[in-house]
Amino acid sequence: MNWDRIEGNWKQLTGKAKEQWGKLTDDDIDVVAGRRDQLSGKIQERYGIAKDEAEKQIADWERKATDAWFPPEKSKH
Image 1: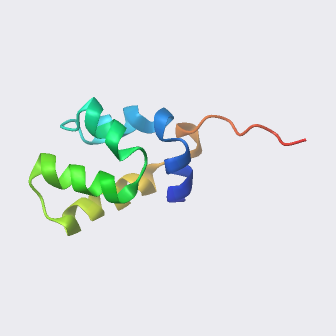
Image 2: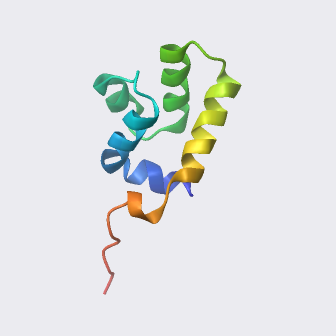
């Protein structure tokens, strides 16, 4: 999955992020706003883990992202 696609659809994916990282607050999710570096920082902060572990979790989550997570693409005529 392309992170740009996750970032561009962040509002639709906040539920998936909260399922994965239940300790993230709504404010955390708003601050992240789809930015991978911000997500990594919030995961480190809330879970007390190192950056490399947070990055691994994000990469695993990103790999799980399927087309079903995203709203249908609007056709461009």
